[in-house]
Image 1 (cartoon, one colour):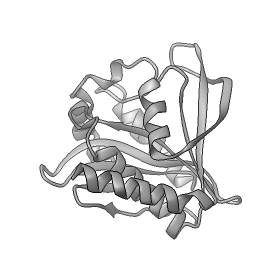
Image 2: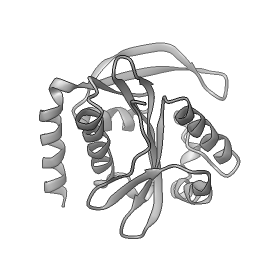
Image 3: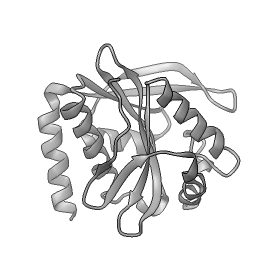
Image 4: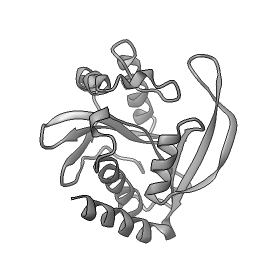
Length: 196
């Protein structure tokens, strides 16, 4: 298998394999900011958490995803979730997606640390040739954060994905390719050094 369950760790966060036992802690984290109310993204609440985790673990069984819970090492609490997903094992491409953080951890170093861990693993251990990021056209915060990582916009997939409410989302696709990784890594490390 190209994708394997793994734990990743930086100075202040740990990414551990998502399990059903994390459901209550994930709902608590999502309650910090009532993130499920964001209409352009899918963050679980107490009613949707079981389905959210089952979907992630099924994709993991199929070999197309590795979902993580994100832990703040200071408080030892789960503060969000992310995953490798939509893996193309033949062409060595993978997406980093389904990422969200409790509101009190947004605009902190957590996203940079999380992405540095995942990108380092993808390019340096998995030998990925490209890592994708996808987001809703209307999720301007996410689009800005992805560009800040050093990803480039590939394009917009119009009417790409049917939402729970029946509407269709336009999906903005970004990527970082392996030849760009050394410069992107240096930039992320520079940001973290300045932040800390």
